[in-house]
Length: 232
Image 1 (cartoon, one colour):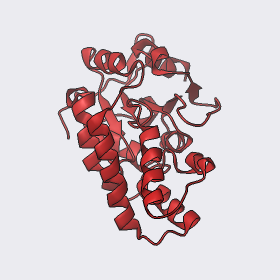
Image 2: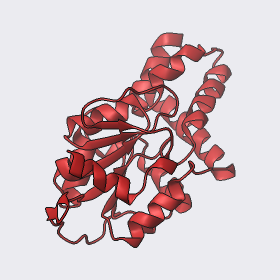
Image 3: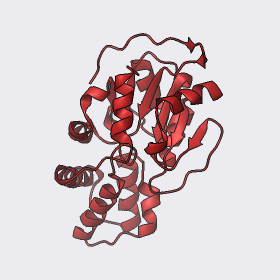
Image 4: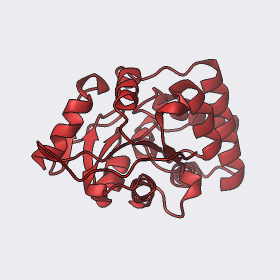
């Protein structure tokens, strides 16, 4: 999904300008990280395997190929990656069709970015079929473009999805604020050269250079994101 985005300015009277905001989806805007794990547990149970709860931190935030591949290897399940991917996506779709709560502060932040005309992209490791379903809840009007994990040759933790989103919005990655909930997503955004706001969902994330950690999206608004550029 694309739309026309005005060319961003490079500076404001207060300093370097925020040119775009790039948002992760699962665990950042929608409370769905737990859904993925629940589906993985159910699918592997049907195959006769019990997942170790400690593996949850290994698979969270990553691309489907990595998480599914890890679980096949860890359990020794007799199933191919392609077949497992179909089962996991279908199970996840069934769950979000029943309920898909937004993370606290998500609706307000999206509305504020739209109100002020801030170019915004949704950047997810989830597949296009999942993103398009979730967009019906988030509101597609809030995003100038979306990037899906199965539409890039290398997804998170590689920088490619965020570099693609910044280019699509005509923005300098260094003038983009990224909001992520996992170490995998943070690594991708930082590798792309973006300013990062981490809102940890499953596992803790430590503050670092070019990275600000907050407890929830309720602490994030447009003034906050613009302040990241000024501080940088």
